Image (cartoon, rainbow, N blue to C red; front, side, top):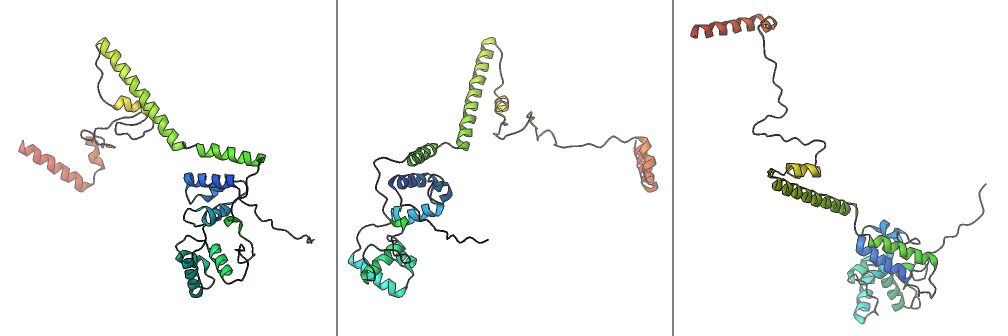
Length: 262
């Protein structure tokens, strides 16, 4: 059974000053590409809402001052060259005006609509480009919670990698102190400890070159040893029975020649 109810799309609420300040603080930490993470700080906004708010209202390159006569003249000229291409026109004007602002100004110049109607489709100013809503005297509890969570998350500037680096540096410092204490105690007892870095590296779980390793570290002297070398077992006289007749005859001839040379 199909329902006869008509779904009504709610327009997003106007932006507030705390939301704008929290958005700018999140942008200073996360940059202009992590819109999903930025929107997670604003419960009532999506990633698209945050991006539109920045590009249409909060970006420092935007000009919110009155239009000059030179800008009006350039806008009229570009509107004849690029009809209804407001994004292109806004870019050619230097990027200081949004597409909605260009369309609004042209409507005002042509007396198509009264001043202040800046949207081409709805006749209303878009939420993303509108000034923030005036602050209330008594701030709602959900807004206070949003600000508290935002402050806590933005204040956490130390991530997992930084904490791991700090922990490893603390372990290295404690290992150096322990080694220095051991050397001092050994020197007072008349025992000399080698200055090799291998015991110090083993305390940190790294080799002398600074690479990680698992389990017990064993150094290999590549100048004296061949790694993974497997020597064949020594041969016995009984091995001649396993040779082909030609190889056996050749071995007997070599043995006879060696006896004659002796």
